Structure formats: structure tokens, C-alpha cells
Amino acid sequence: ESTTKKPTHSPTATPTLAPPPTVAPTGDFEDCECEAECYAWADPWMESFESNEVFSVKGEEGSVHLMYDFPTQNVTFTMGERHFISEVRVSGELLASSEDCKLGKQAYTNTTDFENKYPMLSQFMAVSTECGYGPKGCLDNPDMAPCLHYLNVKVLKKNKYASVPEYPWNTHNFVTIEREMGATGLCIDQNDVPVKEPNWRCTCDTKPTPEPTVRPTPAPTPSGQNLTCTAYGDPHNICFKGNNFQIVPSRTSNFVKLYEIPGKITSVLELESRIEDDKHIDIATALILYDGDMEVMYKIAYNDDDKGLDCKAFSPDLLSASQHTRKGDLQFSWVASGDLPAQDLIISWECKRLEDDTKVGMTITWNKLNIDIADQLKFEEEHNSGSCVDCSPLNIFYPPSPEKTTPPTPETTSDSKVDGDDNKDKENDFDPVQGNGDNFGTRASASVFTIVAVVAARLF
Image (tube, rainbow, N blue to C red; front, top):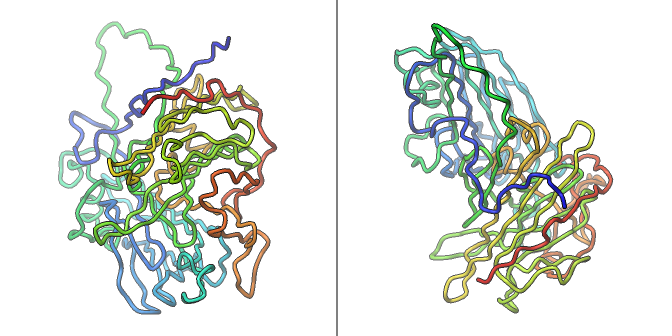
């Protein structure tokens, strides 16, 4: 019987690397670091550094909008046809254009060219883009306007400063400090947008207490603590860092990648849109698990034909592996290989319905342990991907349609693939599904894993 450590079935608290973002640290500090993200996508919608509340940006075709402006750096995007983001520039230099897009294509740049005045010690900014294709459903509906490529944009900013008692540094608030340094733009100036959850976090290193006589014996290096990630509701995601944000659906795909261990497993959510009380909402209605060759291992979903089969873990190889329940979990283990440690993963789920059987969205938790790794979060950021890891709402996934493998544009490429309605909601459709384009790169061959406990089923 294996003695390998396993994560607990009940999700443990995510390791806290910082105090809650809205609460200033207390005590004496040396250096402090802040990190924040700002997003713009499609036609366009945005999240600022200050809040994950989504807001729209108005403008005309050809209008240029300032996402972030600092005395030495800025990021702008241009609205193209039908208000889609068509161009992104960093300090005047073109980073990406929708004219050069293919589905899933990405661009990236970073800089440390900022003027730092004490107590600011260093600044770092990274800007990344990803190509999208929309509006959603345009390929399948001849009555809709023609499909267009567009850009999604993410601005990541990191600041390191010395802790001093003077304002604004004593607030340990990323947005307050940025404003006092003169930063402006849509990522900063959104005072009228309510703050649900901030898109920033700050940490400070506490000064060590002097030991006048005997120093304590150093504690042994910890072996690490479980990380948990949970998707729920409409849908929101609490990532490994503890950030809570809404998962952003794409106009071109209703699939989102939540967690991937390259060459081993990829977890994808399928979203369903509906109108409720005159509001558009999205919920997760299926969890699809792929192996290292991107072939379907399990599809776990609502079943409108037989609600007693909600969340049955259907598998092409293990069709009888689950009882007919609304709750369950799967546990995977991988042995150490090369520079990679042994890894354990438990995926738990529940398909929730109201008393009238209305679907309210799946709740899914990923509980991960990397054996004998002290800094679990750093390991995940360096080796794995998905919204659970990068805490980004923009992790679009493109499974191909059996009949449509490229968008109908004059210039197509072999890796430009889009999904179609004909591969949705097929409970027992287990044809191999491949990832698309630059989002995935070259895959390793199928990895060997052990299903330690196929399903721990519970009565609803």
C-alpha cells in the first residue's frame, strides 16, 4: 500500500503569503512588495487594478484608450471594427494587432524602465495579449455579423518599496501608492466602480527581532502545504493565491482552462449562458478532464434527461466507475520524475440545483500537494498553468469541432481551431480532443498515473 502523502479531502486553507489586501500590515517592516493585474478584452470590457468588478469602455472605431500611464511608460489599446480591441501599444511601440491574429496567438513584453525615487526601490511591468475570435456563435449563425479577430490584454505591475511611516507608503495599498506617484489610466481611475475583490495584494517582510544572547536552533525546512482552488456559482474562482475573481467567458469559446499539469492532466470547465431576471449569467455545467495526450479521461456534467445522473464521472474506459450521485471526487498520483517531485491531486465536485431543479452551477475544488516542496505556490507558477495558478480570468480553451477546424477567414492556419455547437452537451462523446495553437505547444506523450480512489461518492 502506498505511503505517499495525499492531500486531505476537505480543502485546507491556501498558504497565506500576504495579509488581506484591504488591510494594511502592522508592525515594523523592511521591504514591501505589491502586485496587481488589470485586464481588457473583446469589445471591450475591463477589470481595473483596484477591483475585479467588470465595466465597459465606450468609444468609436479608431479611438485610442489609455489603460495605464506612468511618467516613463504607458499601455494603450485601439478600438477597431464593432469596438473590438484591434491594437495594443506599449510606450508607442506596437505589441500586437488583430490583423496578425490567429486563434490563441499570444504576445508578451516586460520592462523595468521606471524612475524610482526613494522609498520606491524597483518597478516591473509585463503586458501580454491573446487573440480571440467573435462575436460568440458567429460561425454557426448566418444571420450574425461576420466573425472578427480581436485582442485580450493583461497588464501586470509589481512594485518593491522600503517601508516608511510617511503617506502613501504606510497604507500598503497598491492603488493609493500608484496614484500618489502620478499613475493614471483606465487601470487606475475607476473610482465609480465598486470594489468587490481587489486585483492587487501587498506583502511586507517583518524585521527580525534581535537575539542578544542565545539564538534559537533553526527549524527544519517544511515539506509544504496543500494548495486549493475552487470554482463556483456564476462562475467565480478562488485561485491558489486566495484571490477571488469572476471567470470571464470568451465570445469565441465557452470552455475555460482552470488547471493544467503539462503532460499529465488538464481540467476544463464548460460554461452555459442564460438570461435570468433580465441579466446575463454564466454557470459551469461540465468539467472535462484530459490526459497528457489531450484525450478525454472524464466528463462530469449536469444531466437534464435524468437529474439523478448529475455529476456522474463518465469515462470512455471506466463507465461504471461512479455511482449515480451529485457529489464525487477523483484522486490522482504521479511519481517523481526528473526534476519534478511526486504530485497528488484530488478533484472534488458537486452539481447544485434549486428545489425547482434549476441549475445553479457546479462547485469544483482542486486540492494539490507537491511532495517535499517547501514553496508550493512558487512551484505551481513555474511548472503549471490555468486560472487556478495565474489567477487570471482569461484562460480560454479551444477544443476543435469535428467539422470545423479553422475559422472561415481568407488566411487560415492549421492550428487555428474553434469549437462548434455540434460537440457540446454530448454526454458520451469521447472522441479525442486536442488543445489549440500557442496556448499549449508541443505535448509530452501520455503520462502514466495511478487513480488511487476513482470516486468517493456521497448521497446528495
